Structure formats: C-alpha cells, structure tokens
Image 1 (cartoon, rainbow, N blue to C red):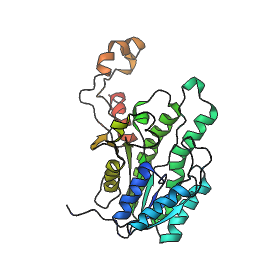
Image 2: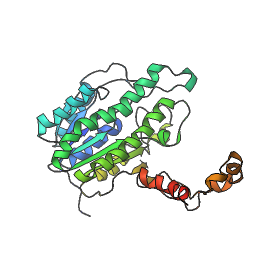
Image 3: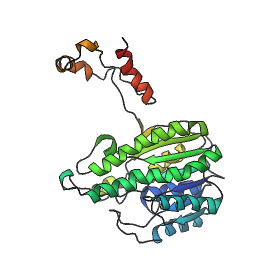
Image 4: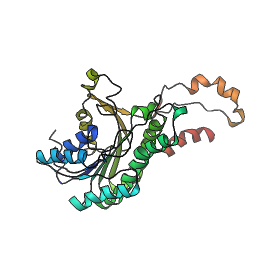
Length: 302
C-alpha cells in the first residue's frame, strides 16, 4: 500500500501538548496535514494550566520537521473554548477536515469519597468537552461534505475500574455520543470512530512499571488514529482497542436470548431461564438502537 498522506487536510488535536495527543499531531503533520495543536497546559487533575508552553513546544517540533501547525490554548470544557479552538483552524488554514478529541484529566477516588467537583470536572472535560469540540466543528465538516472524527474512550469506560466511577462514566458516554454522531454524519461523509488506547502517558506512568511503559509508546496508538482519519478508512461508529502493537475491534454483543409468552412472564420464569438468558453462543453486534430493539420486538409480536 502507498503511504497514507494528509496533504491539504486540516486537523485539530486536543490535549496535544504531550503523550498521545502529541504523537497524533506529529504523525499527521509529518504526513502533510496542517494541525491545530490544542493544549490548556493544565495539571493532570484539571487545575489551572501553565498556559502556552506545551502546545508551543509541539508546534515548534512540527515546524522543525517541515510541517505546518498553530497552537491553541483554550479549554475544551466550555462552549466558548471549543468555538475558539475550531475558529483557530478556520482562521489559520481556512477549513477543517479532521478532529481528534484526546484531552483528558483524572481525579481518581473511590465512589463514596468522590466529591461533586471530582465527578463534574472529569465528565465536563472528557464527555462534555468531546461534545463541545465536535459540535463546534460539525458545521464545517458538513459544509465540506467530509469529516473524520476520532474520540477517545478507555478500558475503564468499557469495563469499569475501581476508583474511576467519574472517568468510567465519561468514557462510556463518549462511545454512545460517537455512535450517534456517526449515524447523523453518515449522509455528509463524516465518519466517527473511537479508540480505547493503552499507552505511556502522564495518566498511566503512575500506575504501570517502567519496563511495561517502554513497550507502550504513544506512537503505536497514533498509527491506528492516522488510518481512521484517512481517506482510506470507510468504517464508522466503531470502537478499537489499541496499544503496544495490539489492534482489535470492540463491540457490544447481545445474546440470542429467549422469548417467553407475555402471559407467562414472571420472576420465576426468568429464574428458570437464567442460564439461557446468559448464554452468549450466537451473540451478535447491532448497528444501531433500532436494530437492537427489533430483536426484542420479534418476541413481543409472536
């Protein structure tokens, strides 16, 4: 296959001052994209940022390798900030083709000890921030009749994780948001996919040993992201686990289930059929909510 290129494309990467976002931005720029490098410069818990420095450093790296980029220092957690991020792309490069929502924070604490602020701040940056930036970008992508959006979930969002009720909720919410946007964007040639990455970053370096982190370079994740935002990718509304050279599609599966006559439905009947209800043999993934609802309706109509 010939090299995937992004000449003439304009991309926004949020949280691009380091880690995964930096790797995404550098790869796209190296392959021809013009990049808005967005980073608030904040600490890992979302407290006040250091300002321009992280984004500026990545812009300097891109320019040093012959690429084109501008820095954005606005937060994704406000509508005004999201609008400014998108406006930066329009002002600097005249259009927008690619959005990679990567910005994130952590406020890990067990559920009973979690404050309202811990909950609200994490959801606002991850879930609401992804929504804000996508919504601000949406009119430009529709006008182009072209768009590629990659949003970021995590294993914690897909499967849950101790001490991360806020983070897990936000990350699974991103999956639902992304799948809905994929359906709404289809007629405008806007494709929306989700990655669940595992990589070395300031979010993982405190919980993983150094020898493991060495094998989880962010660049291994960026390879998938670059494909998903390329012209070659025709898939949309999908979730992919990625990291350390591992790539896998992730899907919500629904078992074949059982059908009870409505006049026989009772707690006891459910208990009697519990093993069959939980049998995942023949399970399938549905493309949208209506398809999934249809599986239940076929029994109701019998």
